[in-house]
Image (spheres, rainbow, N blue to C red):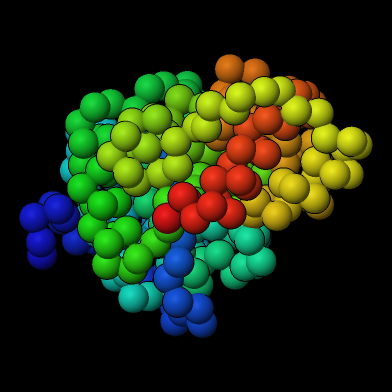
Length: 233
Ligand SMILES: [Zn+2]
């Protein structure tokens, strides 16, 4: 046991990784209570798990050791990786989610997440660009952790990429050019509208309509530029 983990509740829903760890995927539980969510994440019949579950009061429960493959991402894709579970550490944050009354993540919960994420990023040398939400890796299926997740706070702690401040709006020549750039950044563009919604949820949560516009064009251009300059680590 270590000081960042308050309790162990080992989940049988795990197997062996076939890739090395290079990402973190953040989730909300999307169930009415934390107790219900925890029970499901250790239920062999549910066949789902994560490495950590953080309750709203900040209690951090370890369900699966980081060396093992937990089952949190489902059918997912990020930057060429389609077995996201093999390449990632999954963290579930208790929150009823969009279905049961989506609400702000309490301070205590985020205060527990920050040092844990810091340690994970250091131990596995994970680039900030690979600290992502479930909706980023499964845009057509998932909305979590959602637009209330405090990405800006994580960015201030150097745990996620900050939202860039593009100097201009940018309309790509055509939607295909935008989608190709979106794919180059990491997103699965099989469902283009869903991919744009996921991008907006993460980078411009004020307007999530799935439509390409000059503002998100400018953001994407800036993100790719910063990554090419090596600023994404
Ligand atoms: Zn999720």
